[in-house]
Length: 278
Image (cartoon, rainbow, N blue to C red; front, side, top):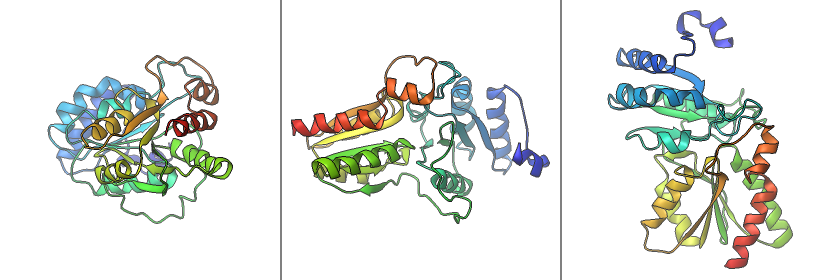
């Protein structure tokens, strides 16, 4: 509504017509424009065919901004954005990004603007952000397929996507202070293309990798990491923390995250269990 008010000639409300909106965006991109399509994650599922045929096959620079990625809360099972990372990473040439906070979201939207291919998919959760000073942040390029180490350790590596990375970092500091455990925390940023260089370094230095995501563990970040690790000559165990392979009911976001095992307490338990096995 803010954008509509300030840029009425650059804003189109097509209603609940996700398939049309996707093809409309591809037409704009074909004619040299840079369309940003903002849509609920769960609703874009209706346009999977159009994303492939009208955007990806044409390699058009359409930016898909997926609101309500992950657990939504009181809207119920139809609105949870559980499947976006798992589903769209199967599309050849697609970029699938999961920012950990407002600054990364801002930089990914800037990076998408400069991209000459597509689709460029950015998914982010419902609710408040992390409280970062994004308004004063100068735009910066966030290279596709490049993650970052938030904490470098040697015992267990946590690879996270999206805001759950911040929860994992807090859990890691708590483990380090209370039990002397020294985990690595990696913010993967891009599900596709994934940072294979970073994953290879993790495999060299760690025996256990824990993936943390607010999406389905079937085929999502866990699938990406497990698939890559299986191609390496070194044995690495990969354990998933995320939304289980079942439909999630109605409830507050906090209640449902606990139900799915996505709280800091759950991650601390997984840390402890894996450390005891090493």
